Length: 117
Length: 114
Image (cartoon, rainbow over all chains, first blue to last red; front, top):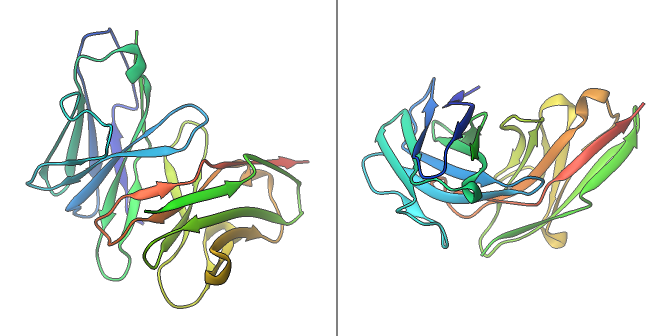
């Protein structure tokens, strides 16, 4: 099946710093990638939809200036948490859309645990 | 707008017993429905999906789900639970076309009793 990787798997940073998370589709090209946030013991919330070569579409309530998304190639999307604060601590998960053939399925990365001190 | 309701935040079954995880959805368009499983500190793995066609969908690890339009349900079942099935299970509905994100339910934690 399709494989999506994320890097890093864990990151701890100081308040006020920026953190970049990478999401890669390893064996397929993904014109669309998604970023989700998962709070402890809660469901995943869609943050934004990232389309290759164009601006990301953010969900209502998500600060686009805080969560910068870049989808520069068909296999890579990045999420940068700018000026991170403790309330940004969370589990961030990306997914990539595999639109080949009849599958059209989202495959999820393993997630990145962000802790802001 | 789409929404997903998973009944029961925790479900406990004995090893070898039937697993039933409930999911109801609301959707303003014909739904695409998914079940994902998440093991601790990991991402989500697709169990199965319903797009069109046959309403009984078979997935990996012996799981299956049946789409019932009249009941707006997509319950997940497995005839015989295994200890390795202990995990968090999420039901999700896709909002529209393939380029749309997923709306997830709150998840059901499946506990397997020995």
